[in-house]
Image 1 (cartoon, rainbow, N blue to C red):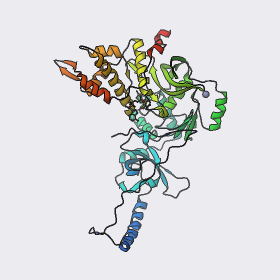
Image 2 (cartoon, rainbow, N blue to C red):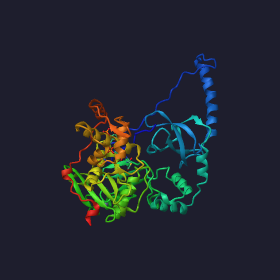
Image 3 (tube, protein in one colour):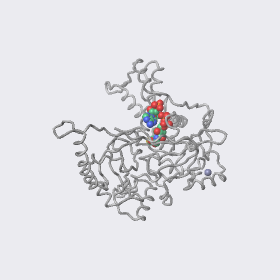
Image 4 (tube, rainbow, N blue to C red):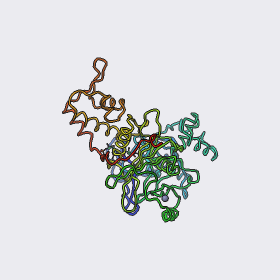
Length: 449
Ligand code: ACO
Ligand code: ZN
């Protein structure tokens, strides 16, 4: 099971999200060994004895080992199973006063977080520690130099890493380094590790200029920067404007620093993506909401200038404060509109994240069902692909998952009963923001000379 819950965002001038309250647990009235209820005096004595024994047992467990599995109180007030990923000593605590970085095993890694001991139910500790994790951690006494080397190798791409270094790298990226960022009017909790340069290792919060995406350690630095920064929108060409929405195309070769800053920022919300610092090879399509203060980045997707695998999108992100408003589907639709202009079919780079897969599935379903609903007579997957620029394999898996396809006499046949189509369309939810193709002014990359 995976959770689609995401960490929180607050407006910097607004009120914070209320803190989660704890529940008191499921306390049953005390009983004697044979199950009869205790009188109030008996009960006090047994409870006192129990609490001494419990205290001792708990103390003997502390500090918890990395790899321990235990139940942890989450922000919904309920207890969920977690695995301890890392631990750190509290500044002003005793020898056993640690904080624990935990992974909720039922949930996506973006919800991993530091928790206090009080959130853990020590009675639920599973005594068998995950040995693999233990081994890895003890073998990870790395020097700063070694770590930097890995970060640098990571820059070139994961294929450069041998299996051992990759494992070590995964170990180091398990804990989020930057906890929050400030971007425009939002303070945003991050989701994943991002390999910022080593000089940013010691800060939990980063301050981004929302226009050039330069990042700083202190608010005053950002304020000084904002007085000087003359950008009011992403660099590059505005290739789409409809109402208050704009899309900018940024060439990674012409705007290297911007491209790199965007990658550092995006990695905070993308898990299984390799960061390419070689941004020369990419175009970035940055979606903005515009007002009289400037064009504020809402999300983006990147695209290789030349893809041998017919990828029309490398990474896609809607910044958390803007999610679930249809921008993701807009960006996906936009990537296919570019493919149509190129006269190519396209597909997103794999792997897709949980949220990425949901968004793509939703987009493919809606686009294909809309066509099937209007179309009279037979239609082939190839024709659907030509009309939509969606790769044939993606059409096939979408229609198969909707059970709209059968394999007859060596051929895939689309079986589209109008009632079934209507049912699926209803289930597919909202269509998202439309791309108005008449507002797109763009020529494919290779044609620019
Ligand atoms: N919970 C449940 N369903 C969700 C959620 C969620 N938190 N987020 C998106 N969805 C599903 C819904 O079906 C939604 O449609 P609906 O709102 O009509 O029900 C659909 O996805 C898309 O919703 P949008 O509002 O159009 O998309 P959004 O602007 O939220 O962006 C995106 C989607 C880009 C995947 C966003 O979640 C994101 O940036 N996630 C982090 C980065 C990421 O995972 N990117 C994809 C990696 S794969 C790749 O890059 C090739
Ligand atoms: Zn700036």
